[in-house]
Length: 396
Image (cartoon, rainbow, N blue to C red; front, side, top):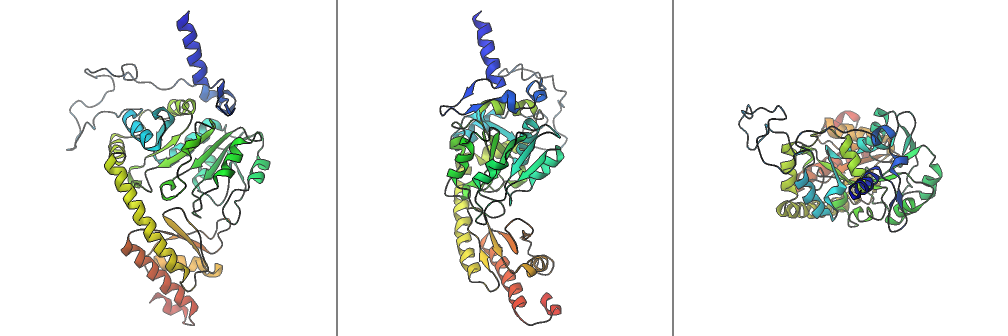
């Protein structure tokens, strides 16, 4: 009888019933999650049923002779489908529990996962706050989910009342990018809390913190326990300098992470990626990351000072990231961007077609010599624009 009661409680936990934070915030997964996802019987392998056991594994049709090329490690074996060791290190670094972490192929897999789990195709919507990261809209379109837009203020902060007024019954997810891409501003925590606390929206709030290690505010993973409908996404691509391994994660309530793990592909994080992630999350890796961030921030301040005095630069926007957005004359911005790439070999990002970003371009802060080359090229191009020289001479 006791075992049946324990099983019932476990099932209720997994299905999201009676989730209540200390502040009264609830998590009703039966209402939020697509019914077919909630009832999904996930793929399981034999090793799921034999966790912690040593022995001869002949279950997964791996190649017993090993890899066809000389490699270190057992790359002929499938990786741990749950990456427990890696999650444990990330959890220690971010101050959360390992079972609150979902690992994916960059943050983009987490974005797609969130939309697939909470939004029914052709029925539900997400809400975004332009200007913002473009993959939210792309993933929504792939999943046949509509997108609602409420622009940020010209200072790139939330219009909280307008966001809440825009919410309809079909709105399931609000994506907030903080620090913002492309602008660089960190959203005010008080504004995010107002959305989380409002009874007018009872869906999921996602904060994309790809650039959080460059921000003095720090991460809002501290709010996950307080707000069970909050998901925080992070990545190794920016501050850790590991964009090439494609590793990101979502930190959320355990019940949400459990559902994500049911939906994901069995081995979505490779052994190679996991090995690099473990090294990044070591004491040495985290220390090196912090040193690099400090250098980038120092370079950024120097670049901002120079850009603010550069002829032709109309505005330099505040930034809590590893990039700087500047504004030049709107009629010239696209041409400057094109010529920097085609004639001076410097590729930056044109953002003039984004909300509140007329005439804007985004410049990544890099090493000192690369920053110098980019600034010199930009200054030369803008100086030519201010001169009366014919267009033909601009290539020189």
